[in-house]
Amino acid sequence: MIAKIVVRYADGRLAKGTTEDLAANKELFHLTESGSGKRHEINVGALKAIFFVKSFEGKSEYQERLDVERVGMGKKIRVSFKDGETLIGYTQGFSPARATFIVFPCDPDSNNEKVFVITQAASNIEFI
Image (cartoon, rainbow, N blue to C red; front, top):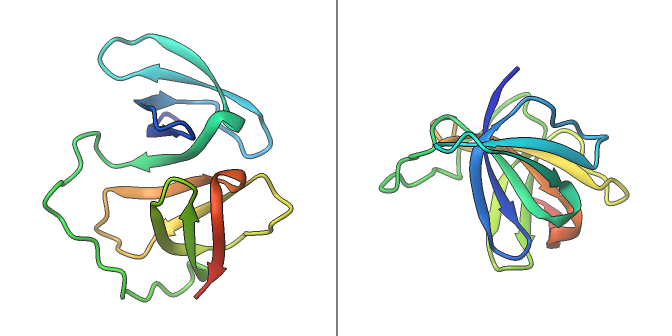
């Protein structure tokens, strides 16, 4: 399945495109850049997070609701990244021993469908 993603590197860089081969147990995957069509091999260890998005444009004026209860989405979690960004959502499988985990946004109307978080890029992770 082809997924639209926004890749955020730990060093602040950003790339947008699609992928077909991202898997939780793989260190590498391929990104086909939006626009240019160039294909790049991406090392998951160099990343902060991978945002699976509905559109690359997003909704800059949209304010996400964080108070939405999403039954069946797992436990509510707050991820504070080393760069100061905070992500709040739901997860079904966080363990500090795992290199990655998935966070689903609180707001079902968010442009993010899910976020693939790289554990080492976080400064603090807590259930709320």
